[in-house]
Image 1 (tube, helix red, strand yellow):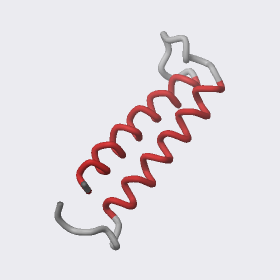
Image 2 (image 1 turned 60 degrees about the horizontal axis):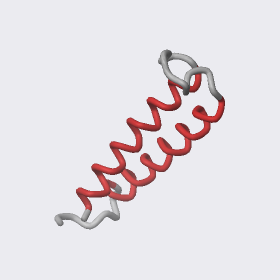
Image 3 (image 1 turned 135 degrees about the vertical axis):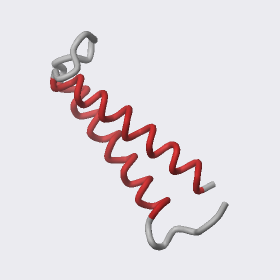
Image 4 (image 1 turned 60 degrees about the vertical axis):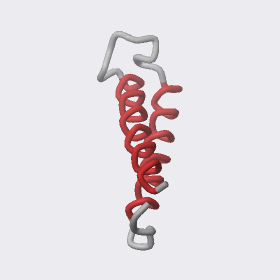
Length: 65
């Protein structure tokens, strides 16, 4: 199940990053552009993805599986 956490973590970091960038207006052309709500949501989702990746890839992570 470790690979599932890795995949989900990567997806969350990418999605959260996109939402964050849209929220701050760097990626325009969406209803999310220049919207503080998406800045916050994107930051939290990306952070959750980083935490998930850290748990899956950290020194205490179970090898294999």
